[in-house]
Image 1 (cartoon, helix red, strand yellow):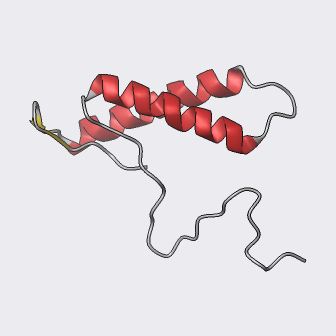
Image 2: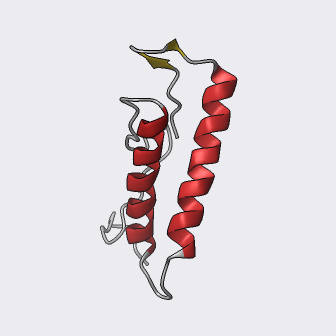
Amino acid sequence: MGLPVFNKERGEIPLEEAQQTAAELANRASYRILSQARPGEMLAVLCGDFKSLYGEMLNEWIKGARVGPCMTKGVKTVHFGISDGCEP
C-alpha cells in the first residue's frame, strides 16, 4: 500500500504520520468490511469493498489521496478467475 506523503494543501506529510494514519485507516476499513462479511462471500468482492472504503477514509484524512493498484516490482499480481496457463 502506498502512503500519501505530499499534498498541495498541506505540503509534505511526515513519514511517521503517514504510516501511522494509513495503518490505522486500513485496520478500521478491514474490520468494518470483514465484520459484515457473510459466510461464503468471495474474497475478491471483499477486497474490492476494502479498497473502496479505505480509499474513502484516506481521502477524508488527506484530500486527493487515492488507493492505486498493486504495482510492486517483481511481484506478480494474481487476478481471480483468470488463468495464467499454469493450472494443474
